[in-house]
Image (cartoon, rainbow, N blue to C red; front, top):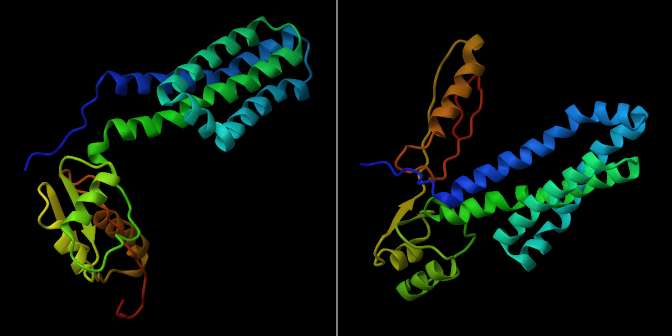
Length: 237
């Protein structure tokens, strides 16, 4: 079986570039702060406010950045973030008063962090073929292929789809089984019992958990989980 690979197009590389761009300005405050402190004759307390202001901007984006993105759209907000961090970096360099440079740091964090808020979601949408969607309940108790097709459409899914169900969801299975490009997989439970010397117990537990949760290359989005325990006597899980 041929493994699916991630195809990076122009927008993907732009998103990577934007993250690198943001990362540069996020870390540039450290090297330039001693020069600001010396040039503007700032105390350690005042100079440290540049970092506090940048962090406050990031915090505000975390609370309300989604409102800006909803109003402007993702890609326009991305360019606003890039322009905002660039212009305020210039203001930071040209400012001759601590109030101006601290305000510039705050605006760099506030506007520039739109990049950090947008890029993960934009990449997820761009490469939706490897997306995982969690559905708490399908909402029907009797088989209905029509309902299954409507659910797929409402979730915005296309292409080849893997639906993972519990074993008691027979009605849902019968609903999806007639849809083309939709494959149904029932969740499976397995148990691994290993006897090891006590001094190797923790290392062995970690290695087993890693092995059980490593996804194969042909199903990188397959939801896997493992629960481990160290016991002195066997107990049924």
